[in-house]
Image 1 (cartoon, helix red, strand yellow):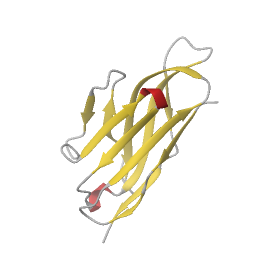
Image 2: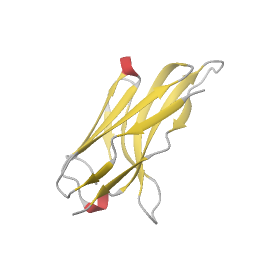
Image 3: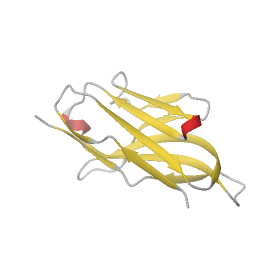
Image 4: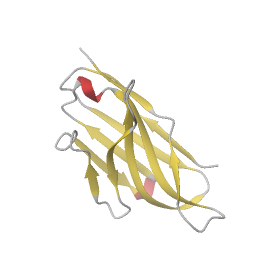
Length: 121
């Protein structure tokens, strides 16, 4: 069974920082692109940042210059460093990863259950 588990969410004041982590575990033998999405109350889920297997990142305009996505292929992990946080960054943050699972010939997209980030004074 394949799992993506996020950690690092919490309550932070405006202007503060948080670092989210995502770890993939289970029976797979390849990881492709990884990414972070978020969903705020009453809003649709949106892409925050993505990173290719080669390490090329992309960001939503709303987080450029404040957030940094990275990955550690040896640990099957991705990270999201969030700086200069704003109240509008409040959301549940979800990790995604394209995994090549045992018995499959193509990558499949997996999602974590999310971690809540609250930016408030």
